Length: 528
Image: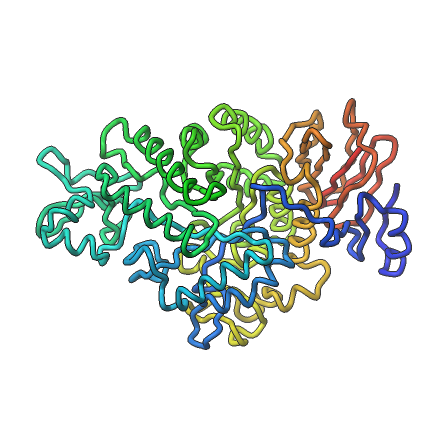
């Protein structure tokens, strides 16, 4: 089968010969999928990380809000999103919200609780689940609990972790930070910052408070679950050598309590560490954890234009995780709100950005897309500059555009085309690349829920794997390079004889006598 560059009319004429499992060819020579072809296989899904403050402004004050986010749910549904992770939405003295003042309310910058409930309801109507950041490790120093603790209220003082006579209050934390912070009535633990005092999970009353908060959001508000911030820091290493075991025990108890409120609750933990540290958290505790190692491997592979050990490492990790849990879900991503944006990490190389997306959306797990990633937004530390306003229009002052932070990355010539408005009408844009990949994924059980299996193909610049279920397999082949490659499908791989999906810089694809010619920066998925 030979496919060469052709105009739109010729593409339509050829489409009839390329009908594969309900797929048709579009003008970019990719395989398109209709909405009726899309599948939802619980608990799998494609998620979207949203920073409400930066997303869409319905009031004209420059700050994103719940009504604005609700108005963009159709956009997310069309993109193919099945779940939304909201960064913190509770009242907070900080722009980011990770220091919470009131765990049972929403930040008035974003609207009212009723408006938030409407957002959740409207998302669910579209088949989109909503999980919210739940910050359990610490509160804000302005939280009433801590303010009472500072006044020597014995009940609330014991809600936090205080140094005793044996504590080395000068010790440094994992990244060199000061851990023990002075107050008028002693030193308190604040692993992340003095404005975030750590809660004392050895106190049963604190645990009860946390469980009650979780039940409130699940039962009364209706969220579908939580992204659990700093999950490995519930107990820190300053609490003794058994702190990790105490963390694991806490999350098992937390999961049990949350499943009483909602048996289908989604619990995704941030355990920023190696697979050996992450795995025990999946043993009856967290259902899922973010795969930071995989993020590094994706970026290393696309920038070096070779497989940086991604497939073998992921196979090994998943096998290890499966020994801890038979129902774990890997939460995968390229970058997020704590990491430089993808486009900045690949030095604005669009080919590399597209290949990173292709890897993320063809690998196992639940992929998380950071808002603006689908249009190629840039941003490097400090954190504020990786949480810039979502670019809906070429005009940064367009209706609904947030202005909470001055955008120094997307102005003038460098910002041309970095908006939803500019890219939706361009067939070869990054946003349409994401859309094609998501829809291809959601039309295949193997791509949604299949296990990963390495192949015998060993060609520099080619990253390939099988996705396997009991009901079928797909062979995924990524050409990460600027060169045309020829791949021999040896042994069992020779049984893959048809295209399922192809997307990229298509000059010509040829599958003949078990030899695949694959163009530069192109993804091809084959089926038997």
